[in-house]
Image (tube, rainbow, N blue to C red):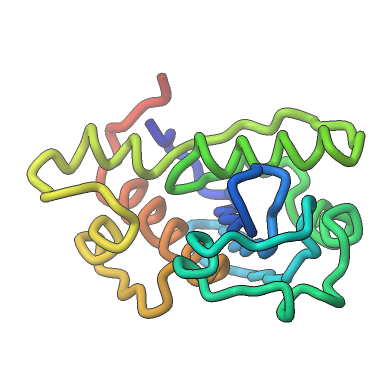
Length: 176
């Protein structure tokens, strides 16, 4: 469950292929005082550097888009200062945290194991009447219109909106 926090960073990755290390874009939304105060988006040169048909069909990115994109360490160098002391929230924590851990390991970077929460898991416990708990369904239920699903920044924005809705409207939620 998402605890009663007022500051966090929503994060979303897209990958180029089946490897969790192949992050090809990242979106970050910084929330302070339950208000969105900053956003960040970047394409990333994936590792391994190839795109599967399946992933391209999902997000529309190809090797042409990331041919000259920075590596993950260069992008993370820009992101890290924004995330200082903030817990992370993703709509599918298993995927996004898995990508983060995998790419840190691949580049032999020190992973600091931030607190990580999941809006999907929380929505399953709180919004049991929804037909599914996909990002676009939960976002719509929480009053957020998701126009460009699978754009990392748009998905991070939807995740942040869901988390804000949950925290503001369900004040009796306590962390597990």
